[in-house]
Structures are given as structure tokens and as C-alpha cells.
Image 1 (cartoon, helix red, strand yellow):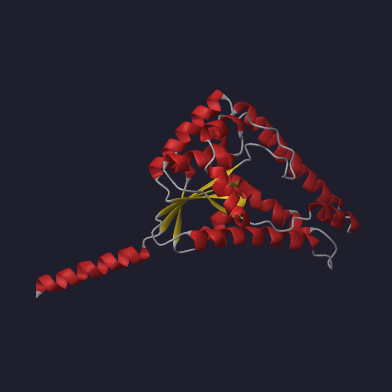
Image 2 (cartoon, one colour):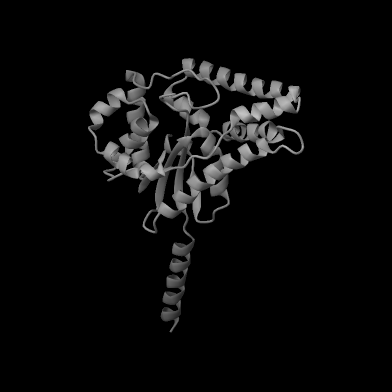
Length: 265
């Protein structure tokens, strides 16, 4: 009788453990390797195709392979998954030598080592009316706010452009995944953008809400496309997205974050 009770207790504990075990997310925020000029800040390019960077990418992807994500999500349009599938099946050797994008250089490289069949696109665009934001500040004669915004922009450009001249790729990646850096990525939206305009002008709040909405859309896709059999996933996105997605994960009991610094040790 005691043996039966003990067995039932063990089974119950195992079931409880299985039900509460969280899925691990390796959240990787990054600067855009190819620097397509889509961000507000004017950032200099990093030589991702150099021999040194390529060696670092091999080491980083090997360490992520050891972590063992079951799926890798990337900042590619969700509605263009078929194009991503075709891209994934191209000759990777030639891609690594010519394509600077982080999707190619880090995500695809890692996925191939893991023998994954595909990458998962989870990007959805929303409106980002930056010019309208500046116009609202002008109309409201918010000169101090315009000055603060310009200082933010120049400070970010200076920090990145100086950092890429003296840092290795791994050092840059670790920097963009620090909590302090992520906080700064969120801070501008609330300190500057949300204050823009006259009291009856919500251009600033609209821009901020659209940014949050875009990231919620992206996170929704991560949630929906992560299956019960997926114990670990990797998410590779721009650092600004990672800052918000980290906040969402923090309040989602089904996931837990694995820091990049832990994987790259």
C-alpha cells in the first residue's frame, strides 16, 4: 500500500513538473549588420564580412548550437514566409560571403548547423510617423523637447559609431543585450516621443502605441508558432524590439529568458 502511495506521489510530482516547466527563449537583440538605413539614427556600418567577424560568427553559432534551440525566429515578414523558405534553401557558402544581414550571418548559419528545415519569420510592420512627431513638437513650440530628441539621436549615433571601431562582434552583441542598453531603447519612447504635441494632439502617443503594437504582434507570432514539442527557441531581432519582447516574456508564465551572455560564455 505504501509503495502504491509513493508511486502515485512520484507520478503526480512528475506531471506537475512537466506542466510547470517553462520553455526557454534565447532572446538576441542586435544592431543591423547590413545597416540598411531604416532606423532614425545614422549609424556607420560594421565589417561583418571580415575574416575576424566570420570567425566570431562561427564560434557564436557553435555555442548557440550547443544551447540547442528547436526553432529560430527572425525579423522577416510573416506574410512572406515562402520567400524566407526559398532564401533558406540557397547556397549558404556564397550567402555568407556576400549577404551582410544578421538573418543570414547568425540565424541561418546556426539553423544549418542544427539541421533545421527552416527559419520562422515573425515581423509585422506598423506605422512609425517620425516626421509627424517632429511636426507636432514644432506646432506645440516644444523647443526643449526637440533639443532633447536631437541629443538622444546624436548620443546614440556617437555611442554606436565609436563602439564599432574598437569592439569585436561578440562584444557588440553582448553590449546590445545588456539590461542598461535595453532600458535606453525603451526610454526614448516615454521620455521624448510620448510627450510630443499639444494637449489635444496625440501623434506622439500614437507612434509609441504603434511601436508597442508591432512588438506585440511579433510576440504573438512567437507564442502561436512555438509548439508543445519546442522546449527551446531563439529569437533574433533588432535591439529595440528585444527590449520590449523581454518585457512581454517576463510576464508570460510559459516562457523564461536565457541571456546571450550565458550561452556565449
